[in-house]
Length: 421
Ligand code: 3BY
Ligand code: FES
Ligand code: FE
Image 1 (spheres, rainbow, N blue to C red):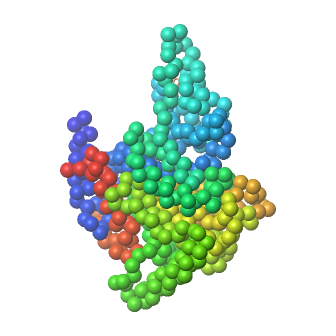
Image 2 (cartoon, rainbow, N blue to C red; image 1 turned 180 degrees about the horizontal axis):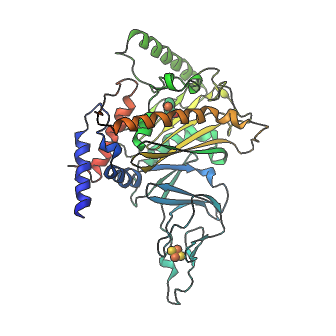
Image 3 (cartoon, helix red, strand yellow; image 1 turned 90 degrees about the vertical axis):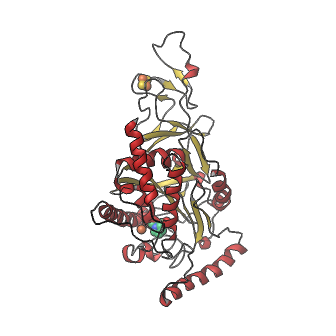
């Protein structure tokens, strides 16, 4: 008990020491105490992106997802409803479902064979006696929300209500792509050698793109996050203004076509942190592929036109690119103070056939390459923050504004959830 509150006080002091406009004090990226605090606050009391509805297409499809030291089961029940439970048997607590995917009729605990219906009801518990009330041992439910086909879970019994705001913005933006009925063409897990916050910071800027992502840069404009270029050098301003002009022109066309495109940001002050904007795809403008043309001949949902750009959405532990021909859905899960799992799923129309409607390498190569490049950047950032010479550094007020907001949001959420003064 004493130890726990000493840890809490240490983390609280580090949070207080963070200077606005700067990266975090090193131990917030490196220490076990901060890792545990992040699992306890950010990953247990907030809505975390965990997968996609088409992870579990049919009744009996099950996935398990580890969130820090916890694990959840997501499944489709016999009534076609999505459900989530803690991946903990109600008997003696064993992990019920192994990592990854399975297809089951019922959930059977490998330890003593307690058996649960897909509704989570305990159906069978051998040797517990005739007086045993199975009704008291339902699997513990986990709050789950399907937002346009992207799944969010919250481990808390009192999840933040502002997930409704995310749904209100994203349901209409994602409707045309019908991600709920898409299919996962490919999935990749990469373990980055860095703290999850460095993974997310790296993702919230494209300051590093021109020099580190030659392939992504063919389809991705570096300055896409709506910053005000005033204060930059004349040459930088000209480049940023050119892009702003392009957005003004393209925005008018999207408006004419009834496509939501403006940036919506919920940052500091919102438990469910997100940003969305319809982005212009560079090059020929169709998709994030090596030649910037659509990779899949069958568009997603009713997204018939390649000119629809890229519906970009990021959240606490996720980032997504939804294009007319395919979507790329990324989730990040903390594995330790200096290890983060980045899980990427490429979604295509459910009827698209590999080899006929798309070439898998062409579909996946940009983000496979980019993920490897980003994993390297996160690893060198972690090496630096763990070194004696590290001091919190200044974020660019232009291209890294979103990182400053992320760090401020993080400090704010931690402080409001037991790690305050
Ligand atoms: O995909 C993203 O959201 C970010 C922005 C640019 C590079 N990147 C990984
Ligand atoms: Fe699951 Fe015993 S722990 S049946
Ligand atoms: Fe990157």
